[in-house]
Length: 138
Picture 1: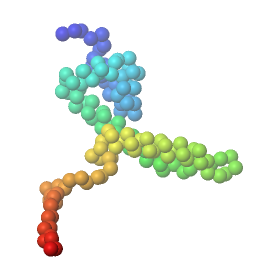
Picture 2 (picture 1 turned 180 degrees about the vertical axis):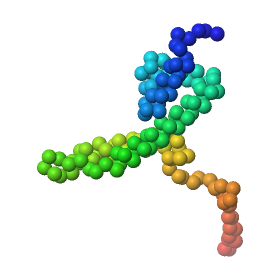
Picture 3 (picture 1 turned 90 degrees about the horizontal axis):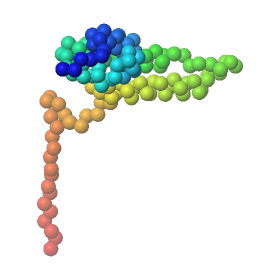
Picture 4 (picture 1 turned 45 degrees about the vertical axis):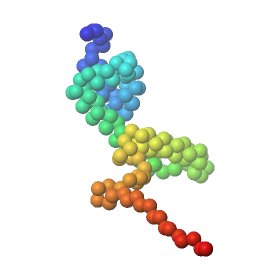
């Protein structure tokens, strides 16, 4: 087995901490000077690390959701003359929409659109074909 040039446990802990502070895994790895592919290999090879990574990822997703609410709950910024700054409002809308989209991809069961294409066990989907035979006139 090839010896890693990184102190695996130390770097792993720092990446996880940065994720909990709001950085993506990729950005946290970059900040700690470890390739994301190396970090993910560590996660794949170690069950304990995989569980810790999953918790950190969950925390990151929840932080994104909380940040979305903070942005949405801010009063609209005003221009120096006291009017609503429409450009700033559009920027806030873009921030919220981007986070909503990201949440829908990272945690679709929790934050994705609810589109029912199939029924569940209590209400099974039923498909039927009705064929009506018509006697020709003549």
